Length: 328
Image (cartoon, rainbow, N blue to C red; front, side, top):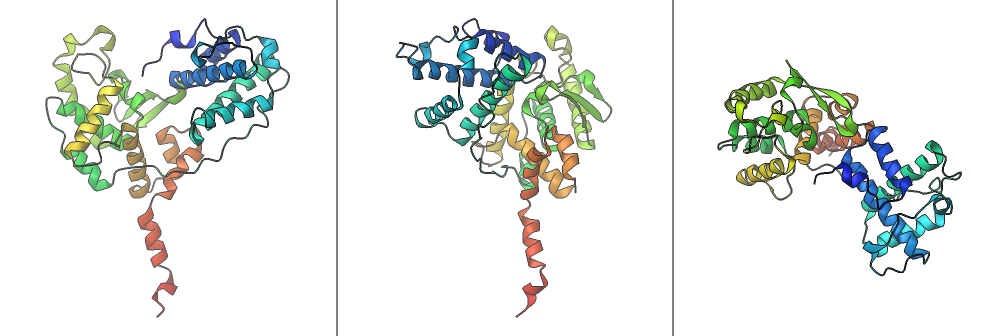
């Protein structure tokens, strides 16, 4: 899905919400996907409140007008209103734990902005709002053997490009959005500079395999350099239509090669290749958690810690090494 400024600056939204979304983009540097999701969650919240308080006669939820919500309305919102909204999201929108947690994050950010940044309200009703307990999930990833099998089936008219893409995913742990945005001018020797999540710049270090596959791909790419669209001249990865490759093309490419490698292609995504890279680095490279955090571009080390719970083989060996194991 693509996100545009038209989705952020919506004349049908309350002024305070439009201002908040622009604040997230220009000051906080949030991704447009995050901004879009916050926008959807807050629209839902305001429509619910209008119906909950009997301030709208529209039976169709999608037709509830919220552009008239002003400062007085915002000041009247209480913790009880938030509880009612979350109950509605769970019971009538079938929102699970993760969906409700995201809505709470949107509400907290919005009311923190209203009370702390623009001083539109005095009391922040989300201060006592707790997030639902989210069960920890270990990341899904490919084994070393499965990763090699995936690379071995890459073929076809775009094999040099596709092999380079897969190699960068599996070696560097890039996000999909980061990979499609790679520019040739940002590659300097064994370093690559990218714009990551939250529009933050970070350096990726390329190993020998990554450098080799880039060097093998560039001559193929450059054969059609004169035909590449003007705005995409610096893009590393080019589509068959001679423009910067898009995310959907890569998602389909990953599934195609996963199927050819007899892997569970329905569930394999570029993000799982990112998990794979992190897992292989942690398991075989003796990479400490702080270094892995920097490599993956995680804002908090707590996000990276999911990779410390995946090495079942080492755990099994540790238990077997207990000297009491040999007592008969």
